[in-house]
Image 1 (tube, rainbow, N blue to C red):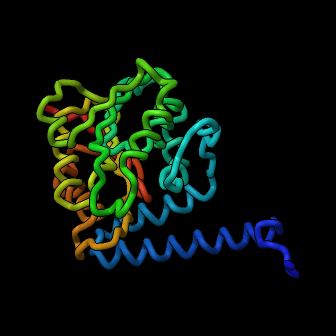
Image 2 (spheres, rainbow, N blue to C red):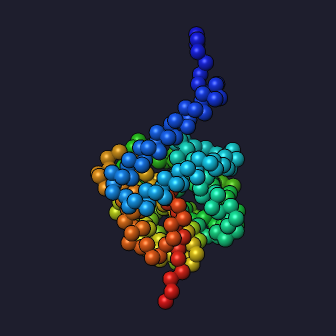
Image 3 (tube, rainbow, N blue to C red):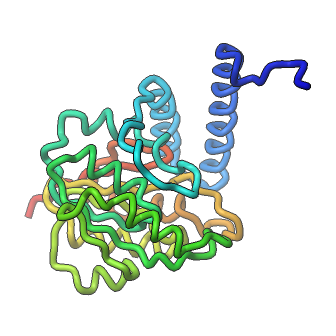
Length: 254
C-alpha cells in the first residue's frame, strides 16, 4: 500500500525537482568545461545559452508519435536552441549529412524540421565502446522502421565516416557530427567536413559535454571541438555553445 503520492503526481513538486536536476547537471557540465581548460569565452557562451535554452523548451515531440526506440531520448532535449535559430531558415537547408544515426532519432527530427531536405545517414550499426551491450541488430532494425515513411528523402550509408568521406562528392548545407566520440575521430570528422560544406552552411557537433565511461582525460568530444574551434576560428562563426555546438561557415575572402 502506498501512503504517499508519487512526486510526478504533484505537478508543482515535480517541476521543482526537474528544475533542481537541470541546475545540478548544468553545474556538473560547467565544472567539466573548467577541468578541461576550456577557453573562458567558450565557457561564457555555454553559460549564456544554458539560460536561453531553459526559456525556450519547445522540442517538436509530435515528430515521434509512431516510432520504435529501445534507448532513452539522448537528443530532443538539446534541440530548443537549434529550433529557435533555424525557425526562419528552414527552407535554406536542402542537403544534410548525419554522421552517427543509431536508431534514427536525430534523422527523424531533421527530416521533419527541414521539410525540403534530403538526408545522408552514415553509420556502421556495429556499435563502439560507448554502446556496451547494446543489441546493434535491433538498433539498425529500429532505424529502418523509423525512417520507412521517408523513402526517397534519405540515403542509408552503412560504413565508417572515413570511408564515406573518401568516396563522397556531395556538398552539404548542414553536417551533424555524432559518430565515434573519441578525440581523434571527432576531430577527423570535423576536418573532413570542412571540404564538403557549402557557403553559408552549418556544422553541428553533438554531445559537447559527453562524459562517456572509459575515456582518458582529454580524450573526449569537448577537447576535440575546442581544438577545432581554435584551429579553424577564421573559418566559422560560433552560433552557440551548449550540449551541442553550432557553427556557421564564413565566406573567406580570396
